[in-house]
Length: 330
Image (cartoon, rainbow, N blue to C red; front, side, top):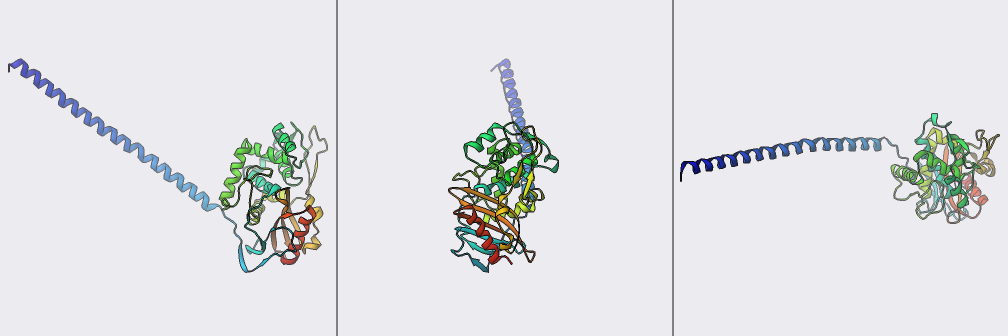
């Protein structure tokens, strides 16, 4: 082998060694970079989990338990679903199928107003919102009760809240959902998130903010009582739920405003309850019968939440509440 060929072979071997060294160094650098990128992602994930856990821990979940003294409500109360809870003692005083699935109809709107109030500030209450055709059409097509707002009418957020509860306005509840979340679907997701937060996700689910019948819009008497108690614990939603009469702001369409009335208060007689009924929301669809959730302060000063569903007639529903309060609320 001559000298020239030997030199060529030496050059090739040297080049191969250099390429190998460079390749190994690059691979090591790449692995190191991957490790460096992965670590911060893990740290962020742990941080998010910690934050979410802390948020969950901050939520006080209301629970009421049955006791050996819990009474079984008999056939004298027509409603097949009923419960009476002592709010302070967190005990079930009386019950009738409290954990069976039922359809809440417009009692749904208690959750609607609760979620809305948790996502606005007091400064938002006087902001004006144009009532959309989407909201009025939905209410009309589904035969909903209405607050009386018209398409394109500029109403306040406060008006929407009271319009949702007192006259059980379908257009108000729908427009409130649009204002808070941008769409009914997004708002319903917020309602179901709240149900999960309250520990009710296994037995309560919402499909709309109005209470229109849907197989996926269901709850139980017990769950409805928990939702009511939570709404009463929120200062803004409590004020709405406990108001008897409200006059809406002046608009072009209603220059004198609209007088909104919670008719449940006009029907129920405090003297028959043995106390004072402070708040209420009724509901009716064929599948639910007449239903209501109410809040009473007894003569002793204790407060109670009563839920009934399945009555045949609005007055039967009212009388069921009167009878339950009279018999069990002390």
